[in-house]
Length: 235
Image 1 (cartoon, one colour):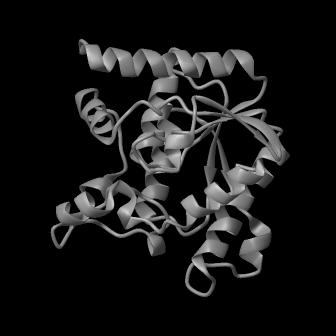
Image 2: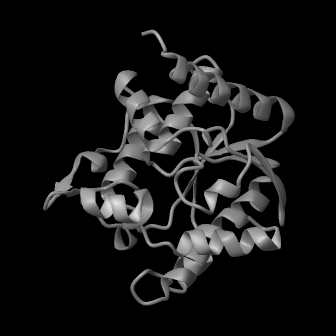
Image 3: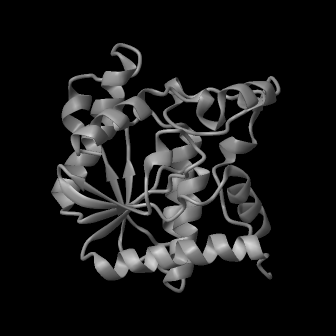
């Protein structure tokens, strides 16, 4: 199927960044959360490397993701033959950290951020690829395609910064890219626009989306944590 000029720009820019990351870093990892953006990034990585992904794919498992997300990750991981790292912060989980009994800022910090930092150290990643977009949240607008981090030292690679939400869905539907079935679920006229842990994720109506943005149905603690840690050189 032929690409439009816009699709060519999106596709070719992402493919170039993905290949540059692979060529310039010894131990590149790809972050995957089971949502539309990171799954499309995996699809693009497979396109870049002729149907395979020659590096580890990392899923930070808080143990509180939706059942559909776990099922989707298992299915795609098997179909695409991914070298999947399913990483948990077992120390925090053993202490009972959860979204109900703990402040969500603390829970997110322990089960996502700390888990990610531990994973980087354990697997000695010198670069990680994330599917963030400039239009997703004001914090993300500060990122660049290659963005160094210092604690631990590694490079953040963002091959999808230039995509919009509409671009992502248009490409997914045109090229039959698999996506999490939760996006098709309608609850009282509302639907999920961004997926995270189920206690911290709510569907949005069209009016709420216009007012709150794509991530309005998500707890914003993660963005606050990332902003603070970025300032310190961690994230």
